[in-house]
Length: 72
Image (cartoon, rainbow, N blue to C red):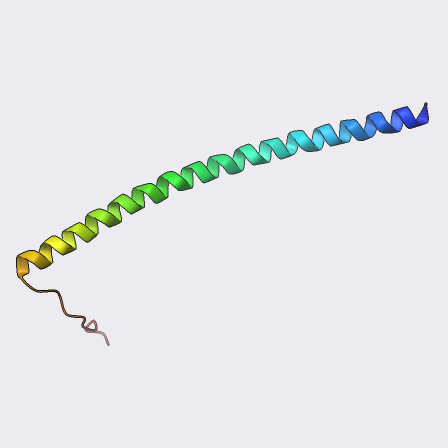
């Protein structure tokens, strides 16, 4: 009887642990989804900026020289 009680307690403890871990996995999944959306948005913005720079270089007829900023 004592073995049965011990086994039931161990199963209950494991079930509680699994429930907690499932909650943690769900939370982490939401974070990953949010970060993925942010990364996709940032990539689109970067592509637009790159295109604008390329367009400006084409309009000016020359690439902007690599110069150190005035504070150097």
